Length: 271
Image 1 (cartoon, rainbow, N blue to C red):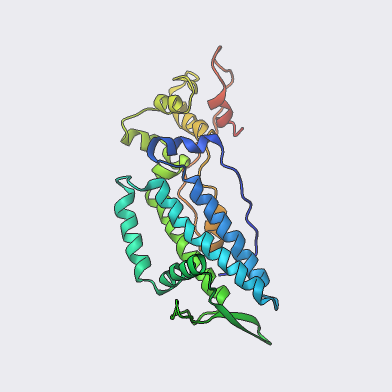
Image 2: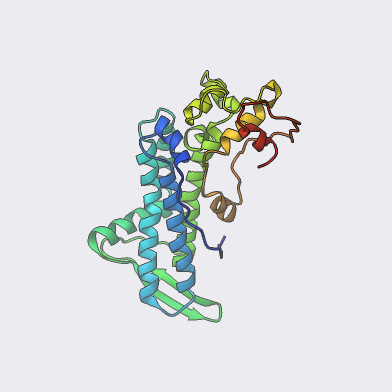
């Protein structure tokens, strides 16, 4: 599948670092950023591959490969050593080692970064368009039969699929929207008051004196943190969406208890 849209690189806010501070050595936002960076260069590659500009294709393919390969490096820097991450990622590594396209791009980056060679070595132009191809060299003797753009798109999808699976399987670790839920905190033996405290609020900050409002309290707290910033990429390239907590139903309250903050009340009203 080929994308035609552009990605918007957004800065992570302080809230998203919260889960990282609890569970990870670095924010998982680094992974989101590297995905956006790789997609940016892939979209550039889509553009230059339509033209007769051999040098531009070589340069853009090189920076794309470097960015795409760094996605899993960022993932490891964030999560390596976590008891849930290591066995999951070991299986991902084994799959990548057995995949010819993943092995090729691993070797391509090594040849480009450490030797200086570039295996984008040929192209043709006909009635169906312009296509560029990899050519073997002494240091990289096996190259894909696919054209350069198709191979790069397929590789990006394969790496993005790994990131998506991480967000699904380890969501409560890497995603603030999946971390701050009643179900997750019950597994941790914690309460909504603990969640408030973890976010820097006083315990009971979202309590407006109505026990039935707890779903709205969790919703209000999730509004204070970032989650995944590459859901657009998941939809565009994988046609998938992340699991998300179901928003609570509308809540109506005539009066706010005196002296209580209106954080949960605002969330219940969709503000």
